[in-house]
Length: 234
Image (cartoon, rainbow, N blue to C red; front, side, top):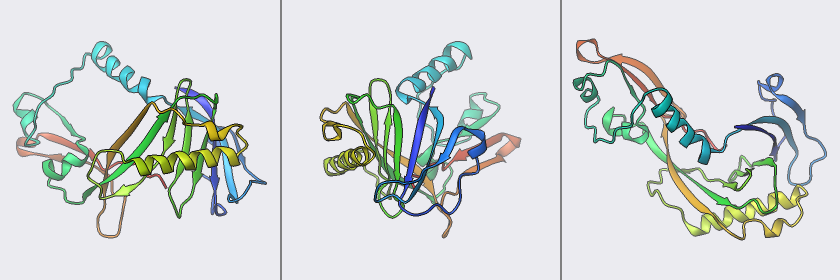
């Protein structure tokens, strides 16, 4: 985890500034932006390289906190209590459709592309195109994350080449328009392409219905539901 300059560009004037502007370093409104952007902001924000951070969390959980990872097939949320556990936090994502009998869950596929940081980029740039796909370029020391997609009701957990190529072209255009030299060379080599299914939850017309709720099973066994968090692309 480190700090990096973050720039978000908007194609329409911002209705309001983020509520947390006074809580971060160097927040400023962006002006005199090139077309097609009409507004935006910049700030210094924390950045996490998840290729390193997630394994570190796993090691800390096991070796420092004494936790254990167990791979097993779970058919009922009451089963862990039969094994002697006193509290269960249910965070099964899309698996909650079956485990919690929650048909409000549906998948939203996201695709990203990792490329080498050959241009030595150090600023995060996001094109928040609310009427179209959101484009973001998140650089780290040895790679850059390019995204992204927000594909509702897509169950196939694989990338498709036309989408990856379109993301890369949008990223090159974003870098070129924001003054990055040799943007046309960006992403000529690929490291990896990733796709995942976000566990979106919608009730009626209301979207982003995260479920965080404590319930009691038989004999007062405490179960905490925690699922439906997706992190919208726009």
